[in-house]
Image 1 (cartoon, rainbow, N blue to C red):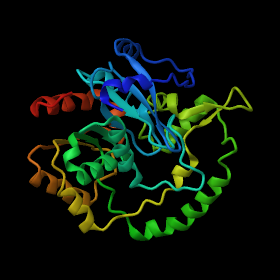
Image 2 (image 1 turned 30 degrees about the vertical axis):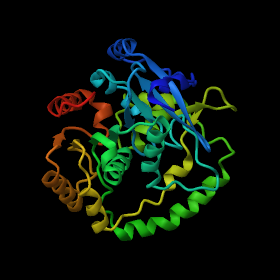
Image 3 (image 1 turned 135 degrees about the vertical axis):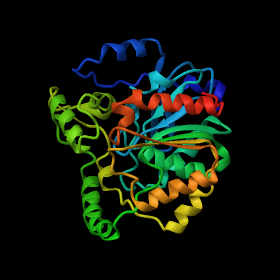
Image 4 (image 1 turned 180 degrees about the vertical axis):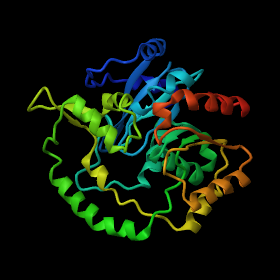
Length: 330
């Protein structure tokens, strides 16, 4: 499907209406930007997305973090969108996208393949990427495996997987494998349900307060569904098997070989109050990119792991300056 007919696949997906009202400024910004829900068909369902802006140009892809969804970009996109639309995707198992088949397992290297699938589906020569956490790691891998297919890359708070404690990882394997098998048996059953207020608090504390309580509503718009048994209750719509992914540390030589292939203009924004990507090897790889890529920029900003969601006004100027400096199509 060519880019020129990209926006004909729009489908008006329904999402739950939340009780909490949005800030006045948020409503005002949104009223000025066309927004559409889309579905990209796959062999086992669809990849859902939220399209911001008009459909006459190829969109920038915005990719969320683990167990989040496209709603993570709702506060930031109105501040940065300019001439090109932005397509915020829900990864498989997240948001409004389909789960993977019951007999399958989520795998961390599947996400770069999702990016390639979307690129091929729309017949794009290159992709432009804005991403956070798991989405940033997936984008980094894609940009390194397909260095000629990325025209620019913006990452928030992650570039590579952290240098995990191997003993800790191995100790979790038995638990995650067992719980993952149990989760498969429950896929046809309704998950535990809660009030919207309870879900908001659980989401806030579940991220160790990385997502501000006021920011949870953006994720809940795509991340909860109403209970069929009790219309006053809701449940998390994401696939419960996502909690049991076997995150495995990779050989350092392999990671370094990947990093050396990155050549797209890259902006990396690291939150000061986030524990991620702060280990010595992550810092070493960050410094290596700086040595090899003269179009790489790095900035520390105050905030948590979800700084782009909680404090978009902090990161928006960095993106605008990056785009202007490198004369990027944005």
